[in-house]
Each structure stands twice: as structure tokens, then as C-alpha cells.
Length: 465
Image 1 (cartoon, rainbow, N blue to C red):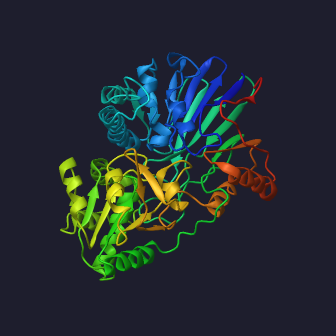
Image 2: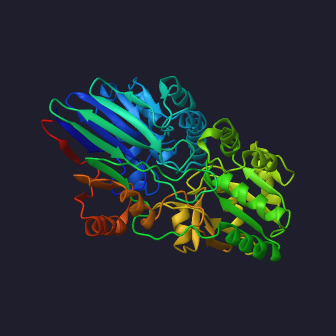
Image 3: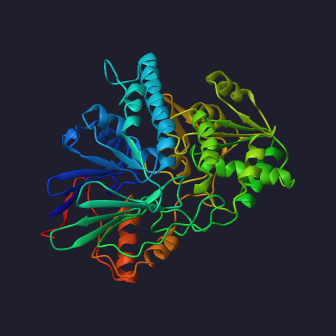
């Protein structure tokens, strides 16, 4: 048996994770993400898929984040009809996140038509809500540590990645004529210290490893998120300003809720309204209750549920309510998606808040190249929103304390648990020079054989097994 992989995304990029694996004539896709950030990356979403989608027998998903799952509706619309394997929380999150992704694309298309700034005479969304709904009947779920088969030669086991509710490290065993080989996809590795999620599970063996590289060359200490939140909130309120936090709807928003409520209970920040302006985040919050068995036993879910229902928290559901938040001038916290500020309700908040010297924008997670979040972090004086260059007069702050990604030392801690070194390791889901420095560090520290793959590159993993 010959086994090959083609890197359709997640190669020299932190988005668009897609890996086409072929074992003789059996073809499956690991992850199926959207490209985000730089325009040259986003344009790849519109390219013709490099193989006939109907020839792909299955998709295996690491987790529900859009850069790992958001291309599914287009793949299905263009002919894929096989099973999509994931954990139960991932399946539930997909039903929220893919619909939201489709609605955003439809809304942005309508806005482009209305404002006339599209270069196309008849702009269309990448996919529609109807396309997204066609994905859901194909979902097939398995819990952590359950083993299932793609065919009579390939079996899969999910392990807890600790990155997001239901996120998985994926072990794939390929049985050849002579021997069995193991492929491990790390997916996105979480942190070893988390209020809600378990630390990433150890994996003992891999012949080939695909290791994520988001913070591969950066130390990102867990630190004290509550101390940072308290300082920034109090300093903003002392100026009679509003604290705006762009946040991913799943994971980051729920963590912020937990910490903010704790700070208020301890009188470390004043009781002010906290507006959750993301319908997806609202729906996702209740999934944490449905999948309580995926959370740490030490996490007090009952207390969290009580805190979610307190008066300090305002769930913003309608567009009209969302827009009315622009009239708030002081002493409030607004949490809105998307976390990288690529679309969604956060845009109109930024449109109004960036201009105000009293307000603070707190960036609480990784920002890919080409995103508004990265441009804010890089200190750009204006940010383009709705076709207009908006001046950045507000205070812009960054915290790494709430990141859901393992940093350099945590990644090495996870890799250090292998009983034998993999024959070949690919550094994926990273960008820039840091990706190559990280690959060199693995070579030097672990003495592993490491390859940094290129977009659309094909590599033989095993021959004649």
C-alpha cells in the first residue's frame, strides 16, 4: 500500500487547514477549513478544488473552528457526499458555526451590492445557509478514545486536544500488507492550565506527525488573565470609557464570562453591564451544559450556569439591539465576534469605538496575517471597515493569557511524551519566519526529522507497506 498527502491548506498559513490523504485508491480529507486573513489566502477559497469532491470518501475533523471546518458547505455543494467524522460537541458546534458563517457571507455580499464596492457585477457568497444545512446529515460522531473505521484498512481514534469543546488529536492507523503505520494529526493543541478543559492527551506513537505551529516559536505564559482584565477594565472605566473585546464565540467568550463574573463577585471591578453580542456565542454557551462530560470535573458548571443568568449579563440577539450598543458611552463591556475581526457584528462596534479616545479594544487571542486584528496589533493608524478608513484613536491592548493554543514550551512538552520519535514530522498551521525557526528548534531539541510543507505540495508518507 502507498500512502500520500497533499497539502491543500494549513501549509505556511494558520488558516485553511485541509490535508488530502490517499491510501492507494482510497481518498479522505483531514480538516476542511476556510482560508482567512490576507486577500491572497482568502481568494483560495474560490479556487476550483484540486480533486473532484465526489471522489473523496470521507472527511475527518479535528474541531469546529471555521479555519478547520468552514469549507465543508462548498465541498458538499460541489459533490462530496460521504461521512464527516467528528466528536459530538464538534457536530453540535458545526450546526451553529456553519450557519453563522453562511449568514455572514450572504450579508457581506448584500452589503457589497448595496454599497457598490464589489469588483464583480453580480457578487455571490461563497456558500449559502442552504449549503451549510446540507452538511449536517453527513455528520457521524464518536467520543474520545473510541476507535472507528474509515474502511477495512484505516481506523481512527480521537483524543482530547484541550483546545476547544470537543477538539481532538487524531490518531490514524493504516494497515498495509506487511505492517501497520500510525499517522497523528495534532489538530490545535490546547493549554495545560485551563479553567474548563482538560489538558491535551498524551500520544505514545506516531510514524508521521502533523504538529500545529501557531505559537511554535513564542512563549505565551498562561499568566493571570483576571489581573489583566481587572487592570484594563478599571483603567477604562476611570476614563468613563467602554471596554470592547473581540472574541471567538466558542471557548474565548465563555472564558471571559467566567473571569469577569468572578472579578465582579470579588469586587475587583465594578458591576457593569456585560453585553454578549454574538448569537452564535449565546447558543454555544448552552452547549457547554449539554456536553458537561467534556469539561473538567473541577469546573463548577452549576455555579457557571447561575452566573450566566445574572443581571450583569445581557445577551444581544437582534441586529437592532446590537446597533443600539453604539449609543453606550461609558462603563460597560461589549464582547462580540469575530475574534480576528474579519466579519460579523464586531465590525460596527469597531467602526464606532476605534474613534473614541476613552474606549479600549482588548485583543485576547492570536491574529493571523492580513486580519484587522493583526493590523491593530501592528499599530496601524487607520483600519478599513465598510470601505472606509477609520482612525484608531482608542487604546489598543493585547493579552495572551487567555489563548487557547499551547505555546512553544507546551508544544515541546506534548511532543516530549512520544515513546519513540516519529519518522517524519510536518510543521503545519503556522506562518512566517517563526514557522521555520520552530522547525529548526524541533530538529535541534528533539533530533527529529522535520519538514515544512508548501501549499499544494504532495509527499509520499509510506510506500509498499
